[in-house]
Image 1 (spheres, one colour):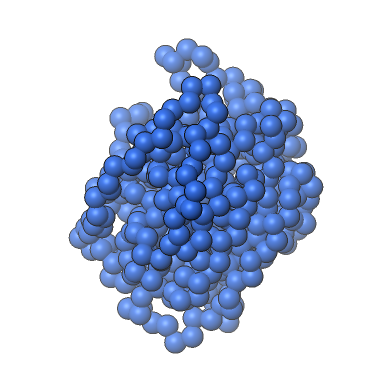
Image 2 (cartoon, one colour):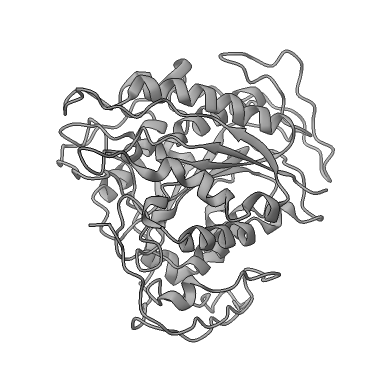
Length: 450
């Protein structure tokens, strides 16, 4: 049975700092730019509309006042959670087009409501170039929610954002997997101390994107399902400079595509959100086109005729269910019992064990970044870093071997330039298939980005 994709625009830019004193962040234009590239038609997706964001106006906000736009972000998050919940009620697969990373709060709220309804926990796969883990316990002040979203959704920070509807945390630390942060992310030790599992770019490349996706799925085996957050600044600025905080050392489009295929190729993936693309830095639409190519190819397992409908994992704290219940209004409980799914091996419903009260772990202040704050660090793994090779065109990536002793080949360097950037959509390509060699060329400039 095919899983129908529903595309919902969430064009909020409330979580970012102003680029200049007289301008506002441009990522609110991202959904329109992606739609202009034929995203919905190519996905054969249902148009789930647009949730209009409140006006961007920092007003007289000053450092020390808490998160800027906090009230507006909280209200928007509740409305976004309602819209995501309605999509899931229809047994559809939500693709949420941000906007900045603060939209994660709405997704997280929707997932917490869902977890409560089914008596289980929902996990988070956080694919981002930054950890976004700045919070009052490790920084002198907070302000830009888009650089603090992972901290907020794991219960750290002011209650009007981190505990909407009295739900805190939306995701437990042990139910979060962080992928794609830079090796020297400033909050990597904080993540490690919190027990949040991470895999930065060097490790992701050493293991390969397909195996990394499988590894992430395994880390969340105790969860009933999981949500996927993708910030396009996980890509190297050589191929994706159109973001608010480009950092060298990211991955390539081909690797993001393979990673996305692996993450969504299971009925336990409940939805995906895409954030931080800024069309102001993409005057000819080239980067928007490449994002659309990657998303369409990456979501093939969801829309394929043989795809399985959404199904929550049976586990120690959740029963498999045949469909997602509609009891998802504020602070509500299911009014009818949840039925057990008719799977190949049906499991009896179980009563979830009580979850201990959450107490955010505060770590010594380390100042934090003064620009887009974020960058998750990983739990350090004993995996050797694979060499990325010289800049420029690289040879085709060989197909992954089934032999566990043979590591998956490292993907092409992200800085291979327009050859990779302009590649044609990889129709019909499986994650372990050989990738075509990129054409030669020089890296595009990060026009307008300092």
